[in-house]
Length: 490
Image (cartoon, rainbow, N blue to C red; front, side):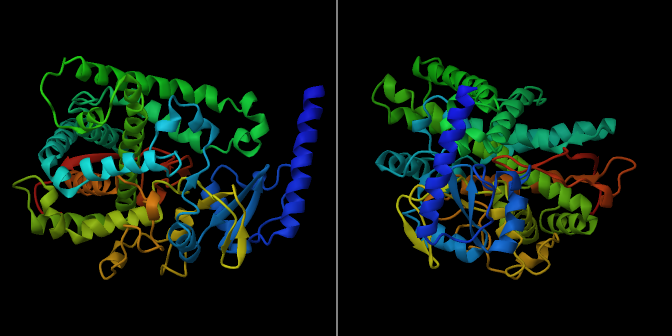
């Protein structure tokens, strides 16, 4: 009982101090909220959607009190540009969720560390050794092989008339693509059975790291882990680190005698001693999770939208037939001939950005944004989901209309702030060049040789498109579809 009274008293003092500060600082507008908890109850289970609704009332730059944390949300292209471009340096820090803090060597990650010299060095290694066009081109054949395995797996399902869990098999493929880029080995077996453990581990991390957590809103309560988030997520982090450690040990001990020239070699070349080696696993974890999960999610959403609009699926199929045919498999070098397919991917990322709320930024000092003060240490969120559905930027924003990108120069590379699925500024996703190649290639490859239909009894109108919120935005109900072999034009 004494502990409860103490916690209540501390929270009340926080609330009073913060409200005194608020009265002397012109914060962006926002809901009043309740004493102590602020607007926590308004977040709901899908914060991307509830924050978008609140922004309609309070404006595109909005302040919410989330427990004892001042949070500023940007929900329009103009406000995102202020945060991610004009004041990029000021907002380049991160607020780190308690769930993320539970991983080993968190200070060695790429996604969550401050933008200091160590971070810049790691970022430079990724940009110059892993994600250059030259390096990605050199691994094209490898990606073609992994995608061919996926196509063969789906082909075997056609023979038995079985349904395919598209998210699961695509996740297994993206996982092997990332694994080969880093370790030069497959992580998942040819029949994709071992994908289940990885999908569970990554799913646990992405879901729990995105769940509203009392430990983040009341730092004084972190020690108690009241929602058990840290208890659930830490074993998943430890298991992934264990798997990575086995691969690193094999390489270091010379069990893999040849130099593979993969990303693990690059990372080991930058290690001076065993202590340095401990910093490798968090970077690998970032790349594995970001590379496999987000790409698989995007492909699943794309197929769901296409199955909901069969005429769009036919358009993509027709384009592939006219440009490539059925005689050979699609290659990465074909993508320039497939503008409509690329438009489908862009439209999918507009409606279903894999990261709906960009990873949280943190104000390094007080800063003026559009006439308002964003105070030092406040958390800043950019709602990429809301921005992609902004009616001021997009005609018929809730409809899946890939054709809108055919006549448009708007791109996802961080220069057009009405469309920022990968973020923008110095903390834009470094893996974007690889992600786009993988998504385009896999999507084209599973459309080219197959006709797809929904299971018996399900019409396109009945296909469930509910979202499951986490760090990434999954389809709540996995997409199950039935393939058959294409014998003629789509």
